[in-house]
Length: 146
Image 1: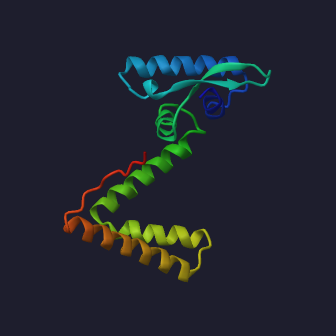
Image 2: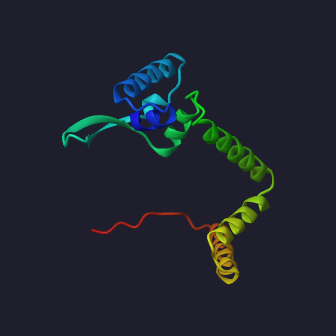
Image 3: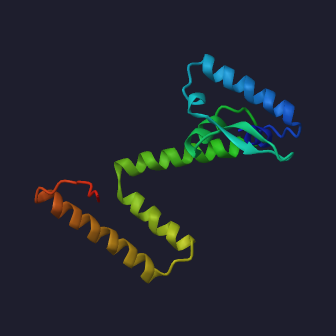
């Protein structure tokens, strides 16, 4: 987490970045934010070769913390998060937009038209099969082996 804070605040001094992170954690806790409680501590190897307890978090928590940092470097992430959130809200109202987004993403990744069509047909087939099983009363169950 300190590395992320250092990049966002353009702070090269580790101690100052660490101090900023400590201050931010305390501020978020005082505001009642649960985000900081989602940060775990893992022993990671530092440049000196020793292992130190270090705050780590999953991507969702990191993105939420980025929103809490007032910084010109954090601003592009905040704009992106707002745009993605808005797009997902639109897709909730019109799911066809999500399908279109998937197609455009695959095209941008260089997938062929045929590959995209096969992928989408496969998803549709899986959905129909799952719907059929559900309609027939099939229940999900875990198979265990002795």
